[in-house]
Length: 115
Image (cartoon, rainbow, N blue to C red; front, side, top):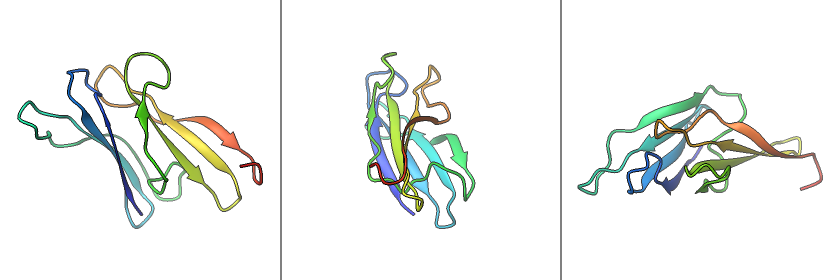
């Protein structure tokens, strides 16, 4: 599959962390966050969300943008999925006070042939 990266200050310490959607060849996917350290490196990643093969929300997406989608002052991450049925869906991982993200919520849907 693929790996997509997005910077954002998820833990609110003024340094950009790295959010990663990591896709396995068998269809599983993990959402990982590497928190930035003061020495310029990163801590070991935490995995606030993962999915088994065959479920929606994959790492096979075009981009992984981070930004404050819901206006709460914390970065959120969006991802899109395109399906063989012709559907397109957008999912949002909302940033939380623990410095990671919550499970994705469906945030947009286009029916087959409309996008």
